[in-house]
Figure 1 (tube, rainbow, N blue to C red):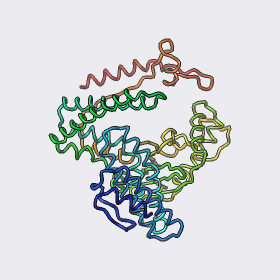
Figure 2: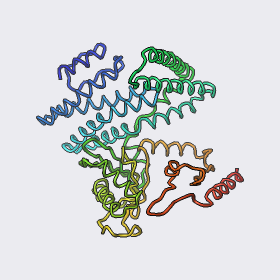
Figure 3: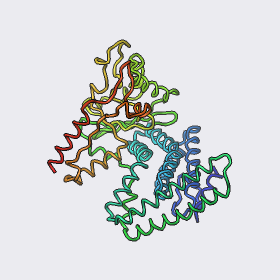
Figure 4: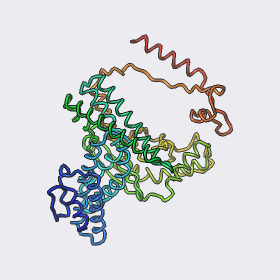
Length: 431
């Protein structure tokens, strides 16, 4: 612990502290990522100390450090301009969020202080909303800051050029026999392009001061705000998928609860088996896997007496959970020869919908309320599964679901193209 504290002091200008819970001023460090690693180790050691001797001061200090780390992660992400950098940070931060959530719930179990559940939910949201939401807020900032189209085009081209050169550098680095002269040339080009991009960002922020504020207005939604948009019959079930546990947050208009579920060692295989049973129409496996997943993911959540009046579930998945249709999960034990038509699906009891995160859900509703006369109000989008065998290769046909299932060939949906075109004409008449 002494060495870790010395490392933190070395990374922050004019910082000296022997306090276990003291968080340095991040503005006084030019080595934020190294500082993140050092604080991560400190928080983890404090959590381990608590597990050994069960002294509250170590758990409290660990939680305080994890709170500081979450703020540092947001600061680091705000300094990144490219999705690849944000994605790398998100992957590196996932274990941090898992331990932070664990620490908060551990203290909640000891104190029953619901503020700790609120913080655990906030951390879960921060872990999953960051990349997509930051892209949305950046686009919104560009629009609301009234940046000229020519300047936006320059920004887009500059960002694209940097993205391409980054890919070229990565490809060259991955070659077994990389040529140093070529790599050096690419790195020099990247340095120049990055300088131009940074200069352009500075130009935009100087000319449009509110751009920076709008762009980084991407913090996760708090519990009180998300509860304000829920009706009495609706619940949000939000998942955080850790290495060892699955955390399930159930949120209603006035309550929050969390379950910590042991994650099966073969969980990924279970998800894959369920998906496979659907695509291959293997009813026996479908029933077996559907029952198992319901038992793991939803049974205990929905048996909570506080949810007895709920008829609608908003699922916020995490990781591989986004790959399964929750509405098909089987809520009761049945014989494996039960026909598909009479199986007790989750959808038979609840309306089921999905969202990437509670933060994005709240933001979407907020934007909708702001723009009641939205220009998209009378707009229309239609999809026609038209993919003819004679014009499409086998790989594309499979991607478009024109495949053989259960001995039957599923090809194009006849007349769907004509129907969509007809609907489009009706909308054009109303404009």
